[in-house]
Amino acid sequence: MKMRSFQVCQCGAPLQMNEAETPKPQGTQVLLKMLAAGVCHSDLHIWDGYYEIGGGKKMMLADRGIKLPLTMGHENVGEVVAVGPDAKGVKAGDVRLVNPWMGCGECKVCRRGDENLCLKPQNVGVFSQGGYATHMLVPSHRHLFDIGNLSPEQAAPLACSGVTAFSALKKIPTLQDEAVVIIGAGGVGLMGVTLAKKMGAKDIVIVDIDAAKRDAALKAGATKAVDGGAADAVTQIQKATGGGAWGVIDFVGSGATVNLAVSSIIKGGAIVVVGLYGGDITVPTPYLPLRAMTLRGSYVGSQSDMGELIDLVKRTGMPPVPIKTRPLEAVNDTLNDLRAGKIVGRVVLTPAA
Image (tube, rainbow, N blue to C red; front, side, top):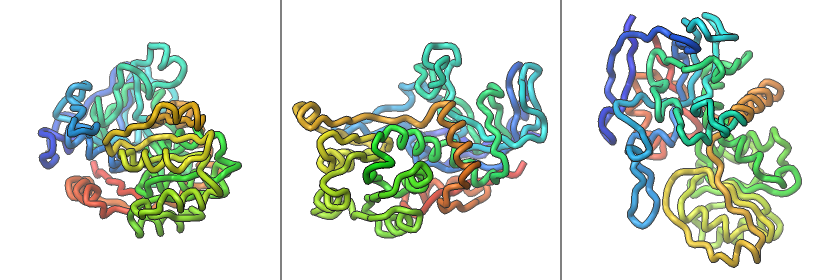
């Protein structure tokens, strides 16, 4: 049976369905029949072919090594159907989540477990073929994680929105002691709210310009909500956090949201920027020492982060983020709905081989 893939053949144009021979795994490779593929907001940037970096400038993804045609989809769960002769620990019939954040596997960064930060990335659905397909070839068994009793549809978003939120939350040292501010209540932001609770946060302030998404975050466990577009948003955040935020995670990553975070923190506060919306900021350099502030980024998560997250979810249950399923053939409509802001939570495509 041939493999069907929906691929970006031209940036911004509808994905095209292409057929090819189903690959046969070699070496440590593992072939999966796709069961679930989450649709992530970062797919929109990949589809467009660039990131906005402010001042009308763009970072072209072709310059970073992304090549077309590309099968997107980096939140994947599949059933093992064949393994290479050197693959270990998996067999046909196993259901596994794919950690998509792959590096070269050989450099210092990879050897310490931070393959997501490798300078030669091979990320699934970005630099290599992803899960908007009936089958996917994974380069090594070491990227596969057992999901236990979780359903494929539940588990798939853990590969990106889950591990991205989890890794960012780990970078907030005051998470269990002080209010944490989460900017953006999209799929990753909602995951952040629910995981923050599981990680011991008691006070979670959600900031979003969309009332429906603020309501969804409150239902997911946020304790307070602020309209990020309000003229007094800074004052509201400072009041909600008892004088200023000790920790802010920005899941939007626009110039406006990062500036909002900078204005809202207390002395000694930390800002973690996750979102890739795009833009630029100007921060007076004296702010950094005088306010003892931390401004840092967080990019997806490491191999160990993925393992820790799945263990946490196995112990405490799946985060109650709204998840809806659609057939693989609905991928173009789904991407357009995501761009239009019509999706609350996550949509997971369910390919049928």
